[in-house]
Image 1 (cartoon, rainbow, N blue to C red):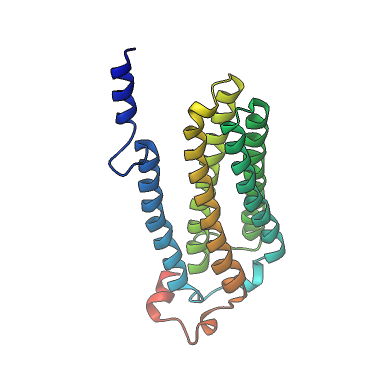
Image 2 (tube, rainbow, N blue to C red; image 1 turned 60 degrees about the vertical axis):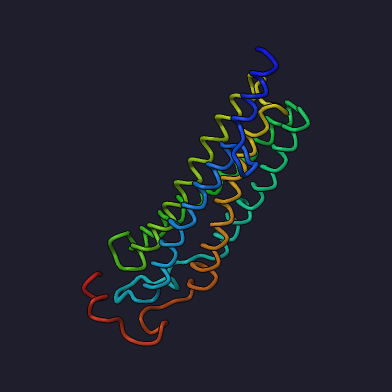
Length: 220
């Protein structure tokens, strides 16, 4: 390839913002996802404590168990940072190890979530049981889907790394995956704070300060 063609190709990789076009698209996607999760979280908070039938959060929320899964997910962000550092350093063994560690921690988190969902089902809470069940399962379920997608992405990068195709020149591939993974972790911190630490002791309409409106009752 001629020198002029190489320079032209490099210029096409970047936008007028100075960011690589793939990184910019990821930021745009994450911005839209902020709105998506923001809407789900706002919906949960609006309907918080409005279920006229149980079980209520205080009956089934297990904060200690979820704290463990939250800690594991937060540690996975550190592993993701190490994976990117290993990529920039062209440490092939480190790339593979840290990508697997990150994916494994994500799998642990999903396993905890599956355990929690099953425990809630055993306690009689389904997505159709009450407003709490509807908003809780929708919000945490979509977050779990995001984590699962991230795990698949990480395993895909691991497969590429096994072939020796990840290194300083392709570090952007790992960096973009890292942006997505850190975003998922940050969203969970918000969810954990609002749904578990703050809303985990709600008992029903009285927790918000009065009986649920008739409309709320008709939605249950």
